[in-house]
Image (tube, rainbow, N blue to C red):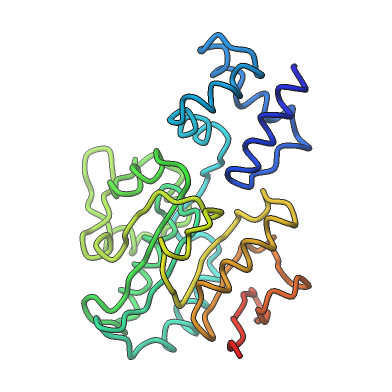
Length: 270
């Protein structure tokens, strides 16, 4: 294992997308070793290759990102979203829609789940909700846009049978998300650390960024929380994973705790 080359590569990855492999070079080596072998390059040479062949970043990001997800993940949080948060926006219309950003949406299970819950709430008319779903990995964005999932996929491990029958078209080997749910979601290939992310996403009412911050260091998390703060409208909500927190970072968010979950609300701007 070429530590010098790996450290250089880890630094390049950190600078580009905030994922921190600097303290876990062995894991990085495992993820990229086959690709390095295919190209017949050393790790050091691969760093130079990335600088010349910009499209190689797409392949590298596929290798180093973790895209494990499933429909109806974290039931208690989703219940809070449906029963407590959504009613606060029930008056929204097509001219002033509820806007939700699912950052790091992977293969689409999370934004489609939210869209199903919105449909279940019966609080919103046509066009009254917009869900922006983004991921840095182009391959998973393409998969998400298809709205099709293998019947053998772990994506359905927590999906209630009534929701499966109501919101999916049953095909031979796949389930396809029905149009009314799909049409509410717009997928984008975005890097959350892009300085122009606020222009790409626009102001939103709610942000979901679950099980992502665990891969970032403290400085990156602080930068992201500031970006989330800037993107959210006053009294907007931020949902993180159950193992993630931005408490104590002077982020401008108030933590809201319930008996079964927690999330954050943006304080009003002065």
